[in-house]
Image 1 (cartoon, rainbow over the protein chains, first blue to last red):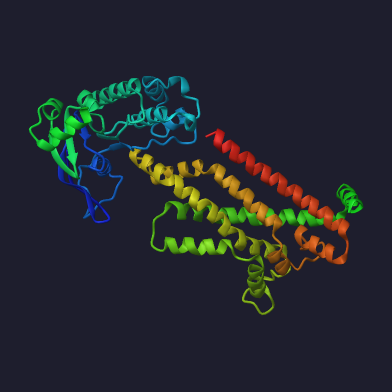
Image 2: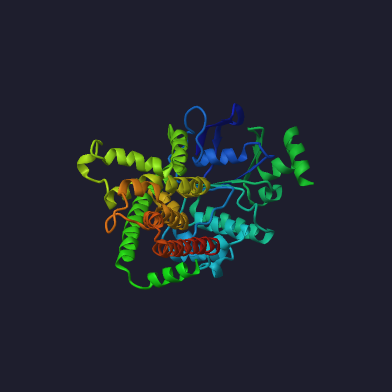
Length: 217
Length: 230
């Protein structure tokens, strides 16, 4: 699948300028870059939740699931939150269980901690099968155990549905663990893309190398 | 003072027909006006808080101005509309409870909109982004927004009811405070005080305060519930 015309400016400042982005079904892509490099903007444009400059982002007719950076819990139980995005109660329970939230299914979602809310939001999104899954820092509020559980769940979901997954992350380690391919953004431009091995360990690009060195410290 | 207070409390429990009528007219008028204002105001509050359309800012500013509309000005405008030479004279609404209800709706609806708009604009961006991310329809997103706002809607209603019960300027001008017809608690307190009948005025004041206390307790309870049950 190819997404075209991913461009966005705020108050005249260009935050993302990408003519096209090709993604392959069944692959997980990690988007890395410093603050303000355009990662979240890319996620929002790819998901179609953000209007952008000069026409529309062209993308194939896909079903797209998107998890925003700020997870939102609706004022109801976890189980009911899950059933907003589907009606398979058994699947809802399985997904909650996979993220160690099964025992909280009747609890009030607004009372969850930040990390639990993020886990619930991820589980809720995975209730439905999408062709493209866009996750904006899904594990930024999670501890390492929950992060690893979430990563396993995302991989299982990809294996089952064959979808493409685009994950925005600040963690080089996470990109290395989960991604088939890593995309490095800087100042709104795609500087480099490649396998984690190539981009993180053996990049020949000076900007990428400096970023990786700095964030690996 | 103590004697008047004692007599006022006795009067409240004496089953006075006049008192009962005044309370009944007040309750009828306040419920009708606050419920109607809620039914009109909530959709507009949701629209202003969640919508994006040309002229929205101007409408919000106009609404905020109307929130401070002096009741006597509202009463005067309604009087001029309903009186013998007014454009709506054929409706014969002057000195009727319906006329008073209309005046109160004009006063209270901007307050309902003004309470809903900032609340909705605070929660809507997150709800919209989350719902769109899941591919949920706009109608279902609206349903989720309303569900998320339910405590605010109820609190807003209680504030509207409280305002309707305590309002005096507009209802006295439009209703004329006619005994056994359009006399409500606030206008009756004024009239009885002017006549020197402090016992009845005080009795009505106690009932009004008790009503206000119940409403405020309910608002406080709702806010507490909204914080704990989410």
